Every structure is written in structure tokens, then in C-alpha cells.
Picture (tube, rainbow, N blue to C red):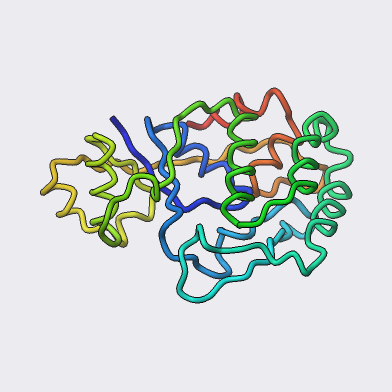
Length: 226
């Protein structure tokens, strides 16, 4: 059994879902420390300048776990997101057919960053036809920090293999996996090139960019470089 783990991100990119596609259980690390100005509350969508940020404003006390981060609804962020997304993608061929669920998210009363991120992750994986089971790490009730925590997640799930990101070699203690008898494999992800607008291809955007441009063909395109 292959387990992969990642912090719950906002509007994740295709590489996030490629990792989900290639494991048997995808664990969302909701009880690890929230990191400001990373991918947990923001991501990029298309622009002629090479990408523009969409950011969810949050309220948090440092240090706190991701699941404790609240949405800052004193700002007009929902209105700004909807205006930016509709203006940017109104001419994308599949946008109108795939926009309705996202409009519902912005109309909903979601109070925490985790709720928002879970919505975006689930909606994207549905569009990309990925059925890998997901679980919150807080539900698994394991202890430990860094690599020790990952090893304990594998043990709790009965996984004999851990799928790490390409950068995992830089921070993981491989000896702890070896001692536990858990094999480690590393993601090798090649980003597909697909047609966007007429201003050249911008890689590594949120996966919604592929979905809104290519609709039902998005799962095939995503898997074309797997």
C-alpha cells in the first residue's frame, strides 16, 4: 500500500493531484503548523504576465495548526475572487460548464481555511476523475514531528511504501523509514503543455486552469505525462 501526504492547499496545481493519483491513500496534513505566504491560502491562475495570485485572507495566531486557521471575512475577498476568475476565464471554452460549483463555494459560509481548501481539492479531483481515498491526519491521531510523523502515518494506515515529493530528499530522515521497514519512492512529475489563451503557455498554475480550458479532456491531458 502506498501512502502520500501533503498539507491541504488552496486550488492546488496539477503536481498535487498527480501525487494523489499515484498512491492508495492521500493524507491531508491538517494538524501541522500553518505557514504564512506559502500555498496553503493562495495559488496562481493565468495572466498575460505569467500568472496572478488568488489569496484567501486569514486570521491566525503563530504558531497554530492549519485546521485552526480562520477566514478573514472582514475583507471583500470573495467578490474579488469571483470578479478575477470570471474576467480571466470567461473566454475559456469549458469555463461556463464548470463554473457553477465554484460559485456555490463563494456563496457558502465557510469559516475556516481547511473547509475552503477541502472544497477546492475535492472539486478539482472530481473533475480530474481521481478517486483515491483521502483522510485528515488529525483523524489518525499519530504523534511525532517531521519524518517521524510520516513514518507513524504509514504505520497507522498499514502502508509499506511512502510516496514523497521530489524535494523530499532534502529534508526527510531516510534512516527512520528504513528502520520501520517502509520503502520510499519519489514523485517524478512532468507538467503537460496544453492550449490556454493565445499569449503562450504558463505552467504550474492551479489545476482549475486545465479544467476550465479543456473540461472533459482534462483527465487525459493530466495523465499524458504520468
